[in-house]
Image (cartoon, rainbow, N blue to C red; front, side, top):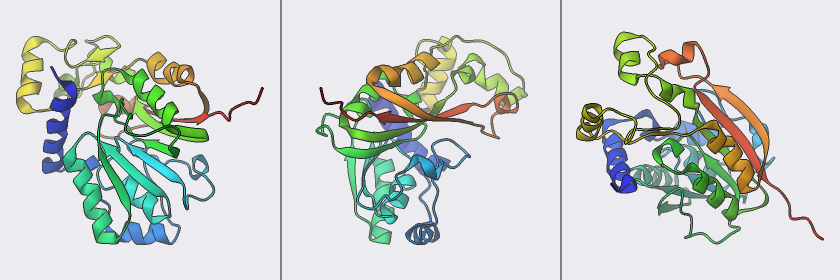
Length: 262
């Protein structure tokens, strides 16, 4: 199946249903950002450290890669960054457009695949902000390679992703019975790991398809793309039972090294 096309429509529906990652920031958040008071999220609850960003974002070229609708991009634009938002969902991009028009912000919007940034020459950006979203693509290493290509030397990739341990457990049992039951293996895929009847139910209900990538693909994949890992933290989601026992999200800061003259 065409995973990208399916997930595009699935996320358009998530916007209609008010998924928290589709709710635009308020005018008050933008006003505070213009005063220099701001924070944004790579993972569900923990603010991304300010030390992970350049000392000044004014004039910095920032790519919000498969980012939340109307959330991080407008905040970064309000503090002076030159922001481009790339997303697979037109409805998510419309959230960014709405905030940009409401707040008189300049944001470039691009519909596309996070694993294919061929519309951008390299290097195009000083910073890539990539919150938890690579669970919606089957091949995450291509995301890292493309991010590396479009970053300038010395630029940073800030990424959030799911701890793959999350995908070991039967999510329905966790949600409905508050019990952890190991059922699957890593790497995980809604397409190949789920039982046929459950997969059909997910598709019929229009849920986005997810992929639980290994830590080797997530972390070694960044290193093999050419990045140097320079920051790491973990986070919890209080709405997920597993978070009572282990962090269920990870964030990394990766640097594209400056070219070395021979």
